[in-house]
Picture: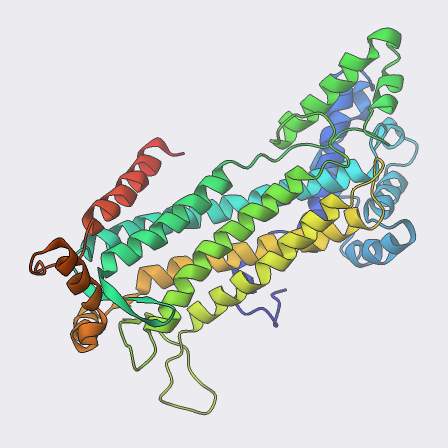
Length: 408
């Protein structure tokens, strides 16, 4: 159900909802049982498909699992209990979850869900790159006043502003492209001792346990890595990428908010939002909501880093637990803001005539630096004071073309 207090939350769909996270935990349990069989640790009849395990969870079980999670501190414990009750004395029931710990299931399930979230974000970033390329190139000669610290500075073009937006989006895209979503399969304390013991291979057990983790990773489509129980970079890097995206989108939204003020009027949203009492209003609602996401993201990212810095022993009390909702909220909001930003830039109206008029009205406020520089150089001011603007626009366009062709 969409969050009524986070307008636009429906854009994130089922990404990282309670039901999706529960389903991801079921997928992890199924993948692990298959891995135990494939690695030769468990008998062939110990494996159950994710669909078969899903069938053991009734429609009303989600609420019960959420309530019962309090007694053990996480939802894996009541989930496993329900699954075992449903499987009874079968081999699948006996082998379910053997060699895993709750942290394995929680961390791996969250990585599955976060990967899905960033797949959605990546699609939107690609769409934004294409639109911003067109804006930068199409308005490379659309003159406007640059503003620093809220005041007129020097002449610039809207094409350069769009190229700077493009640069931010490209750098956010690089962060997202660099993410890896690792499996977590280490058992009680990250040693895989239980899986090794279950294999009955004695001195040769370690490679079998490691192979089981790699098999599970392959089934789930995650990166096969050594257990990372108290090293939380997989979580913080995902958080950093979401914050980086929100930074880039917030920059765009803030510029639109400022430049769409009636007294400036250089930009406007494609379809402004209405007011409950003022019929004339066409509020830049998309920009407002994107800015909201950008303002909320850094504290959530900081929570993830604080939890990582608080890591102790092989499972951290409280710090591990605080990650879950912070990461879920951060990634869902990134998906929402991604889709809102794509719409914002695609429907943006650029009022070049107003930009030119504002530049002319600024007068000496945008020419004083040029006059000063020309006096020092001993010549009259040149007709255009844009420096290397076209070069800087071309640099971002070339970078965007490389990304598009390479699919990086």
